[in-house]
Length: 390
Image (cartoon, rainbow, N blue to C red; front, side, top):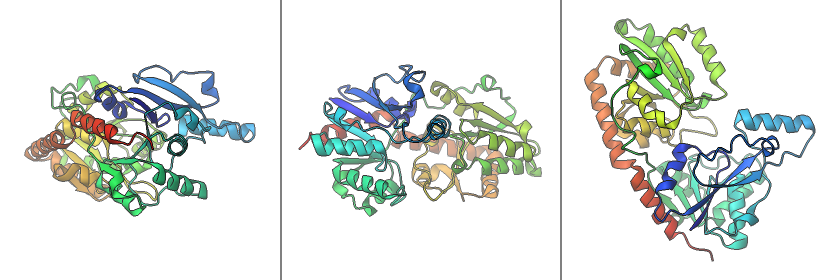
């Protein structure tokens, strides 16, 4: 099978690890976008993802030089992709197209290929807000076209399934399965705090994620400030470990300095994926403090299931799919509420038995639901069931 993956430059090791485990090892080509500058400087082309590429170029020719430079900077540092140039004719040679989300240019090109050449289209959907990302007529029309053209919609949460149902997608085209991680890699193990500059006498609160306001790290910073001033925790040495990067880091650092907890916070930056099990094992509690916005609520939480698989007790907010994923294996708090976060973390900081109980429950839930080998088998089955054109 020749499989085309349409996701632009949003690939990461978590998304890609399942493809090496697919039955029959399909021939995979990932379509990624390049900007004007990257046409000449291909520093991102390191071959690390393990399969072939075809490049699609951004339509950065429109507008004056200032506009083109602004688009380039927004793409490189703001995570925003300009419009891509059409490429659907290049999808004729594939047996199956997989794209992500209904509103993207990538899914729009996949829908055109389905309509014109009969190439089957599978759309993976993480979004869970009905009628989202419909800012203009073009977006609305693209979503309608993708919804009509796709052979199958793959979702990972009940919220995403219900969103598609509300938007009019027939249930027989929606398949829901649990994604997974390698449970032999993400598992409880020996703690090595020295490699991360942490000491054994610290109570380590771990945040892993993209540093954006919607991830709620501001509220976690405020919660840590309250923990440090809690007299009942005077004997605990609290440490916030932040793993991740993003445009919000300077703002978070300013907040940390403003509330006077710089000495209790460690920024590890973005770490190689193969180091993440070591990171989870070094922590005492994992916190996912996501909040909801008009256009986004937590869609899944990749780091959440990695932490659970490592047997780490979890504190998380009632945002989007988090309760569905964590179940009874986490202490759940109100979003946008630093005192709620403080209270939940404090309970775990002062109760080792409760930490152990939650950590064991998290590991058991991960083993039951989030095994990458099960995920790969189910994904292989879906690929084989999708109609081969019409």
